Image 1 (cartoon, rainbow, N blue to C red):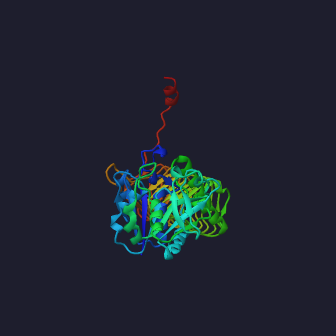
Image 2 (tube, helix red, strand yellow; image 1 turned 90 degrees about the vertical axis):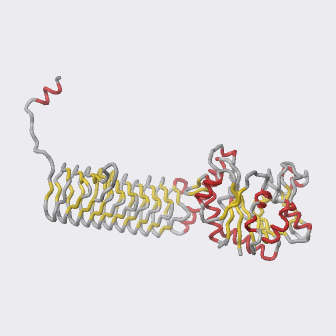
Image 3 (cartoon, helix red, strand yellow; image 1 turned 180 degrees about the vertical axis):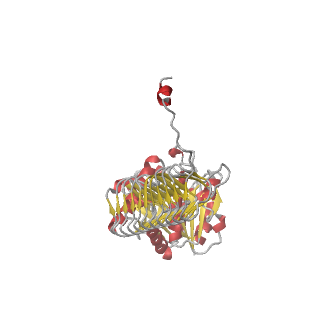
Length: 450
């Protein structure tokens, strides 16, 4: 059985924010979310998050994990003491700080595997300068016998280059049988989790150290500068992966792709593009600069030009934009053209249909080969309720037409430009709803010269 404890009770005062540190966003989710995702990826059975500051906000965001409350923050060891729900659990328990979002599932898997023949295993890193990190002290057998916090180091210990990376894996029974032996006789008068290493070692238990190759993978975030460093690390890692798999990213430093995104082959992504959420992009797709995709499904041979697509899908051989906005479960069919400053909301738009300019289509079902002129509006909201518009195959919607929902436009029907349509139009009919023009002789000059 695999268990995990995430330490996430502190505020993170150096962030200078009202929000809990672990809820600050990197790319498209809070940093805590990356850690939970990584733990799930290695099939951890129970995840317990230790919370304190803004506990309810964290609980609301992650209802599928367990929580332990640390009312007063008295150190990392004290935080683990609060996890009595795991006291009788079997197997190994991994302990990780909630401000380390860059950790990868492969590293967690290595840590669990390394601990199979040990009471505990620590993740370590080797630095040129140990700085403010705890130092790893080993014996002649290369086993770890203690971790000494920087504030408590002797001058000799300060020269040690191997430091504690802040991630641990213990046999769960060993952890909870010994956690209450921690003391507060240190510079901070706190219960250091690191002290359990010397406690276990003194009892003859084997403690191993597992060095990590990329120190930045276990970086901790304490302020907005470090938050940005983690953002860059994660952005670069994801972009390198996709470029290695044949995606042409024109400028990786100006392209952001979420970790759950899926991309096909022969895709070109131009600068200043964000692709987030569970977006899926097919093959032979072009995404031009200024585009934003979130939870979008983009099929093969689609071109997206400086447009925003959220929670919506676009079928093959369709062009979107520039400056289009598709949202709220919109589906656009094959061989469509959605042009300049067009917004679709909760709309089905059939194969071969076109909407080129300055139009809003909301809560609508549009058939195949329908053409929209410029400036069309589906008037779907009466101030209290929203209604749907139905436009059937082959209809032609003239420029500056308002369709007052609920209304149905039949197959091959035509709506005259400038009309406000309040009643259904049958198949093959023309709807026109506007007053006849009347000209007032000389009134234009008279009005201007008033």
